[in-house]
View 1: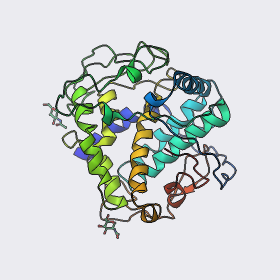
View 2: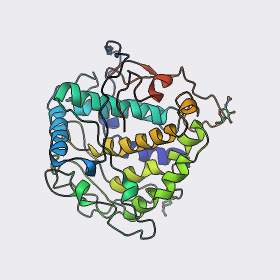
View 3: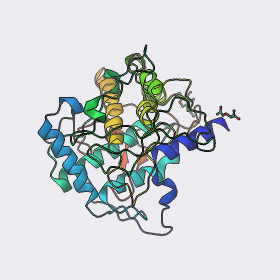
View 4: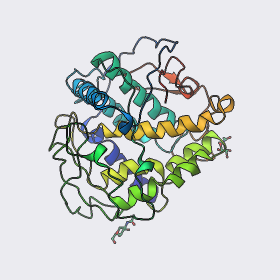
Length: 341
Ligand SMILES: *[C@@H]1O[C@H](CO)[C@@H](O)[C@H](O)[C@H]1NC(C)=O
Ligand SMILES: *[C@@H]1O[C@H](CO)[C@@H](O)[C@H](O)[C@H]1NC(C)=O
């Protein structure tokens, strides 16, 4: 159906490992020791452009280091620790979008990736985020200002630019997304030129990352409506902030690759989801007493009206971290998590 076909597209753009990385049936997944329950000196997450050049370089170096550290996810074809996080996302993709735990599952993934950068690769800062609402020009859909040099520049302190223009086949573009300006391999920036793709779609980023869309999300009265407002429906006719980074940057052909060839390909995923997480954090700060204790939204994707998640609902990241309840993930300084904005 319509939802399903769109979901398939989303899955293929968000998680390139899905097809390439089946879980090995019957392979035992070792679990981590329980996370410490205290949070001391939480790292403060900064917008990429708030970071000094040396902070930016230490982040990029740490991501490079993750790509050179051996995988421990137990997921076939995830070769290094960078792959591990993407692979866990890929495996769980059908169960972690358009559900009540969408935002908190991704919060846990980004925090676990951040922890790996810090504990395994000597990074001392917080996971950076990209606040795309600073760049969107909602009244100028073709503006390329939405792709700032500091993020998408060619140099060693940024993430590289668009791919060359490639016209997708109708089979590659079942949802008829228009306005793609790239599609080929990224050739510059700090990460592995020629091994991953981008397909900037300016009108998507300019409308989906509109500050008014962020305001709309921040005005939601409860967790379930907040979470639903971030994702909305999987079509391109209802601008939603989750789609901004994914489809504005990735378009139809972007972020294609596989575990072997694109180990350092897409750290931008974490800057995008870092910003979504910051929006959740800002929403929670408006009424912490209530909002550090409230969840909602469907257990099964799109099943609005069906069974909802509760504070005790448990999510997992496979072998990458211990299981966590949504209650533990509501507070970014619960001890299971430890960071701030
Ligand atoms: C995309 O366009 C094709 C050909 O015009 C059409 O058959 C198909 O239904 C369209 N898909 C969507 C999701 O609009
Ligand atoms: C789940 O929550 C929604 C509101 O977000 C509500 O309409 C629905 O009835 C709830 N489902 C159940 C089974 O209580």
